[in-house]
Length: 167
Image (tube, rainbow, N blue to C red; front, side, top):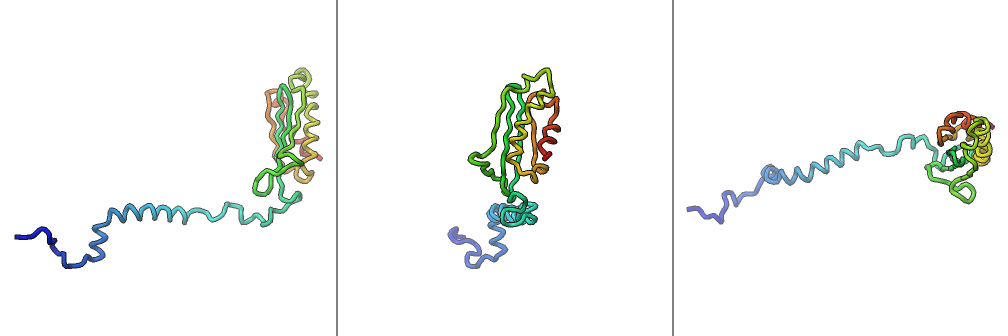
């Protein structure tokens, strides 16, 4: 009669193949995620595209690597201009003591409902304020966005952009 306390082959040592076969489920659970993580890290780019072209030390340019963005909000109750300044990492940089230039002018475009030329002329002072902040050599590279009511769009944002970019 056989004793159950003794297993067959208890005196022999398992081979590596036996151990791998016995623990194949554990190995699969551990090695599959490791393989996926390794594959993702291998395929991931080491640096952002274009980082190699960027010079060290904040970039070159006429204004020390600064970039600007201008947003005109030509509304019916008032017109506004926002000018933002960014460094080479696209972090906001102060313009004077504030993080942006903000100028508001009232009345808005609805006051000039009968005269589109006068409505366009009412934005000239806002364009001039934006020009005071953005260096002349960067104006043609500066994105200008115009938002507002349908009246603002009727005389067109191209004219505002052209007037801003002109010296």
